[in-house]
Image (cartoon, rainbow, N blue to C red; front, top):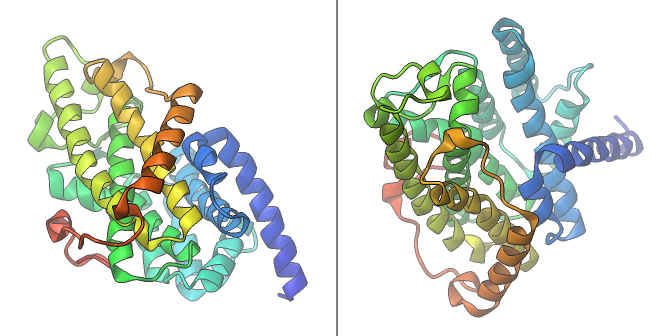
Amino acid sequence: MSTATANVAARVALDEADAVLVQKGRSFHWARRLLGAGHAARATRLYGFCRRIDDIADESGSPVVARAALAMISVAIARGEPLDDEPVVADMLALMTECRIAPEIVLELLHGMDGDLDPVCFADEAELLRYCYRVAGTVGLMMCKVLDVDDPQALHHAIDLGIGMQLTNICRDVCEDARIGRRYLPATLVGELAPALLVDPALALQPVVRRSVAALLALADQYYRSGERGLAYLPLRARAGMLVAGRVYRAIGTQLRQIDHACWQGRAMVPTRTKAGLTILALLKLASHPDYLHPSVRHDQSLHRLLHGLPYVD
């Protein structure tokens, strides 16, 4: 592919990803405006690929068809060979070359999405956290590369920010996921409940679900705190963008706490006025707190205790 053709393909991929981002990625779309133009474009292209993979897993209507599609993309990523009918994959391969993103990271993301095609009933925290690493911690790793950051300590914190966001996502979408046969709340918290019982939990089950959501949000907070400690490794504008993205997504948990973790009452959303307030507070914090200016705290390795053997883990 010529340089001119590659540039046109990247521009088309960016435009398409931007349209999807406006519709489906409101929190990141809000925070993206704080990034520099080059980093914002790369991050949007990365989002477009991740959203494409997620849509294959969630919207294909057939696990067999979805698994075959993910397998083809996995082979393309491993070999570095684009697919004729997947321009998003071709652009991702170009982005991987541009940003030196290792194929093993992308393959872990695909592995995680493939797991969603089976009935999901997690047994324990280890299974949950390894899943969160695959579908979101890997995105944190790729975002570091997109933002031109290679420091190993930064990568560890990036994994944690992704895990915190995914735990929040799981708490928000307990009922939505249960409708399609997925129970991410581990059995160690809720017992061996069938997903269908979480769609509209009976009165006797509501305290169990509330406690489980509260526990996972508390766990998410540990990973958010670690993620923020890694912001000092990023370029200055990227620190602002990632801090705001994390704070806005974390606010979903605040919305759930305000309704006593009753996730079945409707999808928790962060109003625009709240996003604006969080943005102002985050920027003031960024300007005044030394932890955001210079790396000062080493990564807490206990957060990766259950992630042993995964790429870029302590």
